[in-house]
Amino acid sequence: MTILIILLIILCILPFWLLQCRKGHPAWQVLRRYRYAHRGLHHKPEVPENSLAAFRLAAQLGFGAELDVHLMADGRLAVIHDTSLLRTAGADVLVEDLTAADLVSYRLEGTEDRSPLLEEVLPRFAGKGPLIVELKAERGNHAALAEATCRMLDRFRVDYCMESFDPRCLMWLKKHRPEICRGQLSEAFLRHGDGGGQSKAVLFVLEHLLLNCMTRPDFIAYRFSDRRKLCLSWCRKVFGVQEVNWTIKTKEEMDQAEQAGNLVIFEGFRPGV
Image 1 (cartoon, one colour):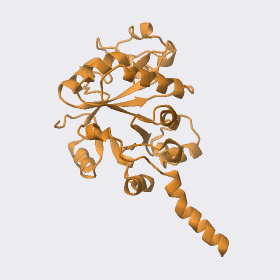
Image 2 (tube, rainbow, N blue to C red):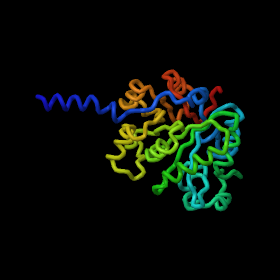
Image 3 (cartoon, rainbow, N blue to C red):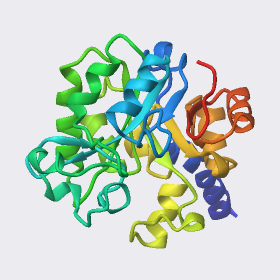
Image 4 (cartoon, rainbow, N blue to C red):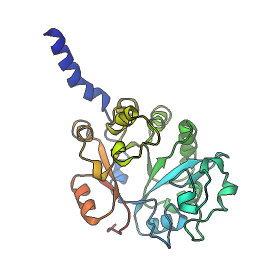
């Protein structure tokens, strides 16, 4: 009987420890005022995703923007979603193997636009909407990527937060740059086949936010269609963490998310500012 009681106590305490988040970051005073254009305000085929044109349009119209950052072979930072350029530029090469000089050779989706460097995007948002900067770690470069991105952001007067699917990026931020607002990205990985080669056990841990105790995120960015998760509800109700939903594709989805108090990363339509 005593063992059973101890086990029940442990089961009750465990979620408090595993799912803990950080609450009340001062950056929310600005971040909560905006809607965020997913990979910039793109509309194909004229304006490709993660292009200077897409970010320029988002900033001009008063939106914030979400963007993706990769660390290249020369230490520069490319703004592109996929590690391969095959989908966006028709070239079967990996961005981590390229230099900034190489990157200018590849055009996006049949346009004259190319994947920009982070240092080219940031001036567009000086004094304008904030950025949600997603760290795309590859080949164990999470620490180098996080450090290089922080150094670049330090050079510009922009409002921003940082997020990643890779909790190691958040661990680095927690240790070395705790003042930065940080968020854990997640979804139902097995449902969508987005495992990236990880084992089912690792994907279970990531999907259910069980490393929050090590990352202490300021927000959880969860796929909108997967948002009805007990772990996410616990983070919101017990720890008061901010939820961000991606990718919002209709006004109806946006209304549902915002009525719940969530921030939205939208794509495929143009909401009000």
